[in-house]
Structures are given as C-alpha cells and as structure tokens.
Image (tube, rainbow, N blue to C red; front, side, top):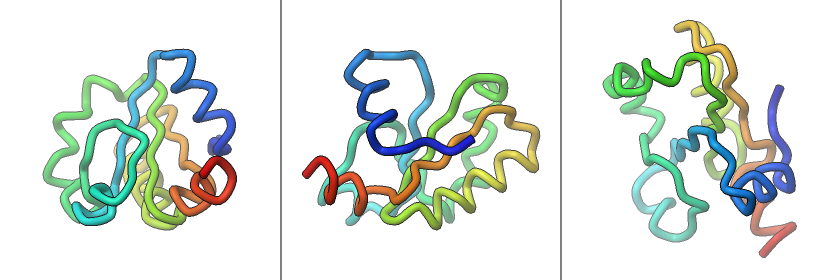
Length: 99
C-alpha cells in the first residue's frame, strides 16, 4: 500500500522505524529532500544488495512526482521486498501541501 504525504510527515515527526529512500538525481536532492538514503533510480540495481537486510521491513521510496519511486517499488517487489511504499505525488506534492 502506498503512502500519502501527511502519513509520511507524521512518521518522520514521530521518529518511527522505517527505511526511507530518495530515488531522484543528485541535483534534485540538493534542491530539497526529506532525508533518507539517496539511491538514484538508475543505480538501484547496483545498490540493491545493500538493502537486502531490509527485505521484510517497511520501506518508503520517493522521487519528484511519484513516477520513478513507483518504478523502484515495482522493481523491489519483484526481488521479494515485502513492504515497499511509494510516496504518492512525491516532492512536488510535499511542497504543494506542506511547503
């Protein structure tokens, strides 16, 4: 199940335990980010082994609009990750709602 902006903000504010991954490019992350590990979508296959230990944990992926993170979610699910959630609307929606 994907995740809405407000739910992610609440999880971050409460310091909940989950894995947060930003799949945008370097220049996008430099402009604005909400934290997490930076793994651009194109390099996800090269770095997937680093995430193996989190296969059964909640993972939230985000990008600019939700498209690339949706691709990352699908890729990770194909590899057996059990609880990957895409941030609906990405950073565009985050900035629009929470500025």
